[in-house]
Length: 350
View 1: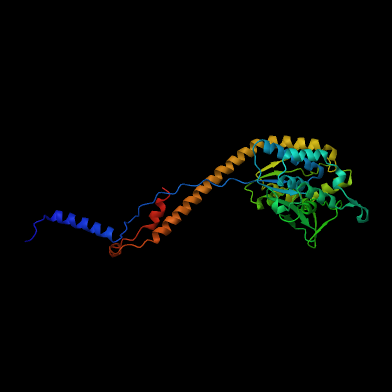
View 2: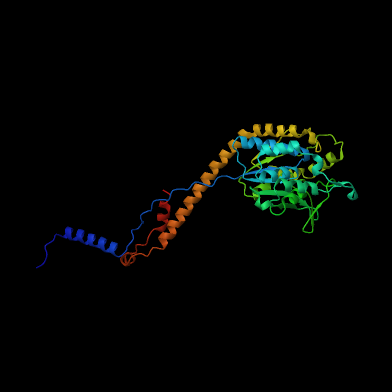
């Protein structure tokens, strides 16, 4: 007997049956259901780098800067130093706190780091400085210090900047601090090295190369002020500053914040003014704190935004690839219903 089911009901029943068959055969809808987007993980914290410039006895100012940064919660992750900055930087990277550094600086006997050799024209050999630094860091190699550290020097044969990030810490500091005409060049692996201030007075780039996202530079270099220094060390230091002035200005421009302690009246050999230099560093760092905090906050917001955008791009690409790898069911293929993978990818970020 022929069924007398009304035609509209038959049509509804056929559509329902087709839907069941599509589901049973693994058919996909035109736009796959979007999976719940994965939560955005927190971005990695900004790494703060400290670039400590050269300036002989003015370098005691670096201790004051570090004291104030630590006292105000600014954690330093990497340190790069040139000349006097490499001496302070090595001690700080070894794990020594700034108050201990200040205590040692006040008690430092200048003669303990100055070894003049008459047969080399009265130049300072530098071995005493090397031994002093190695004694302070317990002979720890650069790459095993508590924090990443770089000492910047100048290769005498080529004039190229050389960044020491492994090996003998005291020897690297000695190479970075070998002021031409005052110290003997340091021989390392057959090459000769002199003061890093010739090519990188404030080693901002070296701090970045260590992985710093945000660089605080401390500039204590001599500036030409219309008068000539009266002593040999002052003449040499100002000559180095003049030679590296243009390159140094360009490198300083790549720092996020520049701190300039008022140490212009302290001569390169004025070790008796070490306390005044430390105090100048403290004052300059305190004055720079508002700028440091504001720019750190700005950099953190930019980092979070970029991190979120990258995460969303990765999620969209993962969803698109997962969609492309799906095998449409037999009936879906017959009906020409391929998954809309671009729509699926876009939906993950909505």
